[in-house]
Image 1: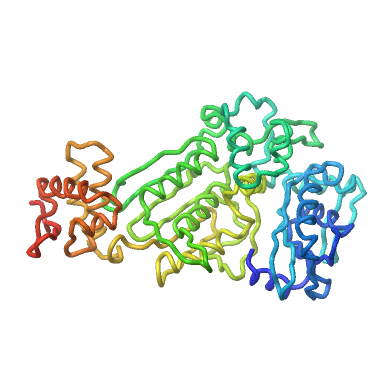
Image 2: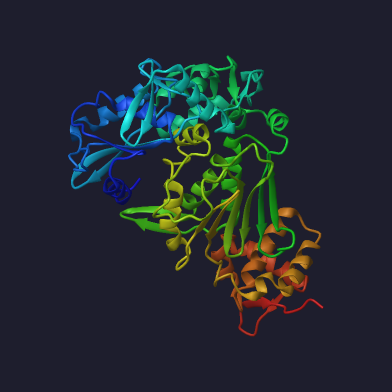
Length: 483
């Protein structure tokens, strides 16, 4: 969350999903009543260091770190908040003062603060003591999130061997003092909300979220036979594909496979943000990949798709929409599709707080693909369209998807060569589609392949009749027809 976003929340004022808390040296005594109410209602934003009227007073700089630690510790303490829901404050500087910000998502469970249920209205937090009203909250949440579905026969032995230790390593690389690192495996999974009890039915066990995050491949397929993520490259052979991976594994490994696909097929571009050099490709697509995984409606059989075209990346995933049409990044209100999965990926350091993805992509894509914007469309199938820079000139000309591209692509696909070589030649061919002529050194700089490899590839393409030497010495160009 950046200062501009916080300022916008303060300008909106307190309401159903925004709460200001004045604090200097200690956490407010009623802070977790608000946390509990947000979890039980529709989620909301908490700003510590702001008066009820919106005046920024800040928290004491020398106590800010302690307040953040205490907030995280208490959110994971069942004696304070039950069931626990791990939360963290983000420190934001406004008017030379420190404001602590936390987004609390709507939970799939009913929570209690100090053994009291709280709910939220426009007037603020209120106690719910009547059994009938508490049952209404349970009923309201019963069909809310498919990720919270309990599988009472799912056991820790059904999880991929070694994956919980891998989770610990990822958490440790983000925060060596993280609370989860001190817990046993069972305690960690319970703290993460992956094991729950339905107090209406008495049923308890590991959830669908646990199976998706940690399960063995055959276990996931047994629970969700339709689950898969289709990653496709369509640059030259747009009727089929130039490269493809069919992902049917746990979400932790699925994230790594998708990011490897991004690294393989999309260009790097570095950007100086302040004094720090950042990799735009990594920042943008870690958000896109995490969004594809975290916010999918897994009860829907529609497969998720991640498709790389010559000028853009498009993703599709099943959705439970709360609106329809294009999303305005400046005005949209984020809400969790799968809060347990989202929280887990936050702790792994693979996604930031809710809503950051769309804002980060919108802010940075104009540097990655100049003069272009990303689109996010909220429908039954959520779609993201992210422009990417061309490998050479803009990959948007008619030849990229035209008959020449298909003709030349078929020639390369018919060659008796190993698959890695074929993929490399197709990538080089897609670059030729947008350049009148290229030298070995230019192709090397665009692809990252060595000049020696490029010379060998050019020889193969010349032999296949796909390229030829141009009139300019040292340059090569496409053959306009292979007939």
